[in-house]
Image (tube, rainbow, N blue to C red; front, side, top):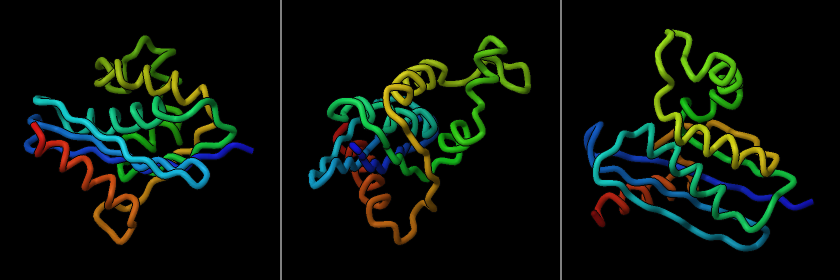
Length: 145
């Protein structure tokens, strides 16, 4: 069984403002880190971008991917399957407004369907070493702008 563990995080200096995303990817005994930034964005976009980029970076399809994030926005969407309702309703939310960040949600949904992904929520800024590292990568990426 081919498995991967991913920790992702996004950060913004101001919201909106300069933003960064980071991810720690563990595939077997191999550990990699990916990160990036945008000059003008939001924290939620960076949380989603981190997950998108991490899944894109995987080497081939996986039988099980555990993606850990401190973003309730990200994890709850998949846990509660919000995206199914959004799709059925023409990409409008429960408030009858267009779903924000649709482009990233659609990319993330496509990528998640290529693997068996389990989304797990962790507490941010706690003693979770890999979550702290993903956060540090996101913040370092902002500093490189």
